[in-house]
Length: 490
Image (cartoon, rainbow, N blue to C red; front, side, top):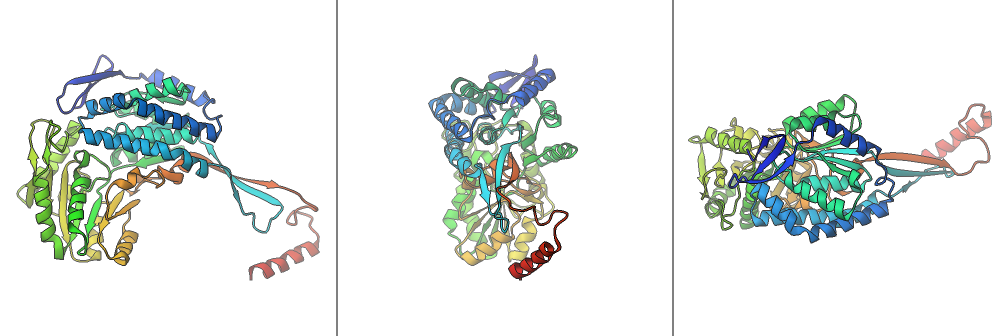
């Protein structure tokens, strides 16, 4: 475990060393209910204009930059991440916070629509906050995931009650302190701490107007079932088994470097990490030779000279090891260096694993990449779609027509071409999955609008006579309407 429970407190342990790095109080159920109730009643934030909310988010971004060391120290201490992994997560948050206000000003403002033939009607759409967003976030990115989700909800005018992962509660606490000191509106952004039972209180509360969950497909299904009882809106960003497709005309060197970074960044503990690489037959042997050399040059360990950090949660490490143990002896396995015992796993390639193995059919979520060859697109899609996941995919090649056809046939929410992972950092793009990878979208205009009540309004500007479709209309009006419709729509 990367934490333990003592005296109603979460004691957080650094997964690299298992040293204690901080404590937070577990929020008891009564306090959870009080927190939700106060958030439901609080109107000061939602009553701000969109312009002023955007100003507050910009001010908050500047406060985060001013407190960068505090945030990064907390993030590193509770995850054991390498310095550059910490930096990438920090950069991603800043990029979203910088662009979110401009996106919101365009996508959430009153939008006038064409009233068609009814020229005496003014039609428009308004985007109103839903109320209170309950956000449940994971442990792999304890700064980026909860804070981006929370700020999207806030800029949309909602209040937020955030429950971070019990494994990584320290970074959100630092961010909350910065919010309170520099922005105020304390009841607009509140944090509760605890395990799954506390998250359950959030999901089941009638005062929570939308649930945003990032985590496992297993838990996501339970949350969806609970929310379905009252038809409560839910945004679910769940697991992935993200494929990378390497076509025979690819730039192999770029494909190899992309696969290594996409599969091993953050020790593979990324929902959009490259878990499986599908390589066209003609170049498969050459690709394997190149990536094998690359993997052997990468190491896991405590030193900053090592490339990969630890498994943040022990249960996840056990799952990764089980996946590898099952295929050991059944296929070729190539490993990089592991310079530490304990919570570290060497970067690993698994070549042509058995089709019925867990490593093929389940999300692994570790520094492990499988490689399989394919003959044609039919063969490729049968392997990709087998798992039911559909979060992200990447395609490497030069034939634009072929790449476009493949991209349009993959059932995923996100596709990168000759690139990996960076789509998450582009704030204007919607992010989310298909199938077992989730429901709904975050980020971009689509994500902000997902957190709003979309309301259509029609205003009658003027009239000289009663509406022609009301009761008691003269016969000549009815006949005239029929002739006009025939003339206009023939």
